[in-house]
Length: 142
Image 1: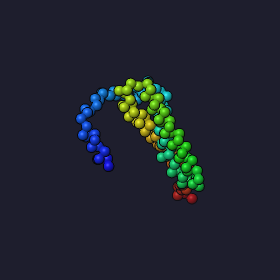
Image 2: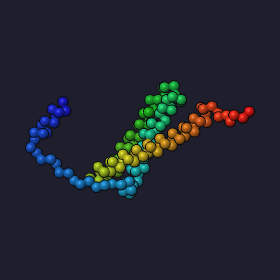
Image 3: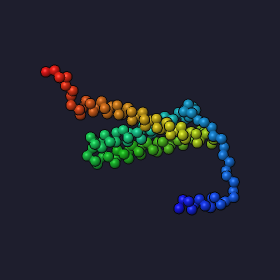
Image 4: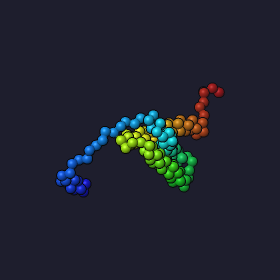
């Protein structure tokens, strides 16, 4: 079906659109344009990272199964709209030639937030697991 949908485009005689050269946008440039957008994007990544870091732990150890949908909806409902709003806020202050490159940087910021959150929570989970769930280590002395 997709191949058949492309046939009218291939048979048209109109020229291809002209592409503008896009500008590169770094994290520092985005921060200068919109500090709120940069921090909001990182924090939305952290909220999305909560699903990957704490979701399985919550599901296995802390819940009977009734609270899991609420947990996931809260994390996704808080992270995804915040990510979209921050992206729109940043794009409001950019030139059209910067928007494509900025969207890649925004995805990078969100991914960094998710990675930071996942790493920190994984470290804390290991500490909690070692102190509460695992048996105490014996030294062999009586």
